View 1: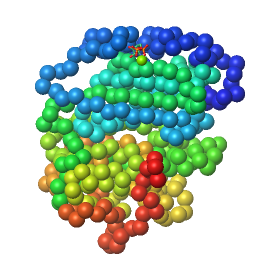
View 2: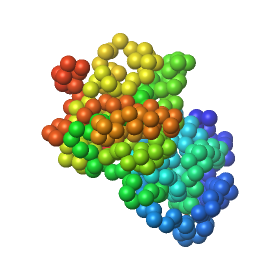
View 3: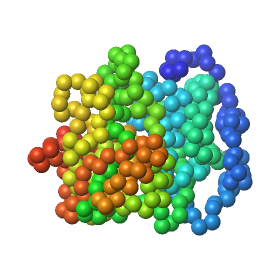
View 4: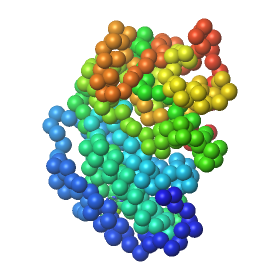
Length: 342
Ligand code: ADP
Ligand code: MG
């Protein structure tokens, strides 16, 4: 179901009230053993594992900034709201454990929408062993606002930060790049035009898969120096590793992992696939750096998790991040990835 404001016949959130709505969410939550007190008290109580450090991250999703209700069905919106936060824990090499969900909801939103959203959110939670332990609920005068806080854990020596990259490291990325940005272009061009073999790109955008098992395996392997998830395009996100590690990098265009169907359906503009792969957002793949001698072990390590990793470049001591053609000539980027204020 895609919701629009003209669907006024449905039962709406205003009939439920704040506490009816919280009860409705709570009745669907399955508590995990580590949650001593979940939704319903002033604060949740959880048992954290000894010798672990807590990883915490929060993300906001705003209607018409991060999602459009004409594109995002409520079930996949629920899944994605949690997936993008889980991806942040994966990017630290952590195990996601608990989530808080805060919602500002237009009073005209149908209860069916909230039910489907909650089902999507809780399905994603169950797939990753995450328990919803609280949140906040209020009404919104304009648009749906979703804020998710995620907590995870990892042993201190295994946590992977942006700041550990060393000159000479190989730059790696999991999966394929550009698919979600291609999906966005397809939706922007009019969703009725999306062909059968192009639905994969739209679902990469609307229903991303956080790379939790690969992140954990890499953290436990001790093979990796730095890691980040690719949410704003690899140029921008590797740029964060570079900035925090005081290094730069050379990304090779011919090494970028582009799926064959992506290349086939990207049209006749030869630059477009590279542009989408480097600067398009929302892939939620992992980008990491590791010493070249770990190359074979890294391939084996991520393969066990059912994903592929591809070396896409080299960390340099000079601070620039550049993309180069196979002959070493620089590739001019049209833009450097998504930024809310530029
Ligand atoms: P308080 O007034 O003390 O902040 P609330 O009335 O906001 O408490 O919340 C009551 C309980 O419901 C708390 O446990 C809170 O974490 C939980 N809660 C509120 N909104 C949500 C939500 N959208 N999803 C999950 N839990 C929620
Ligand atoms: Mg509250």
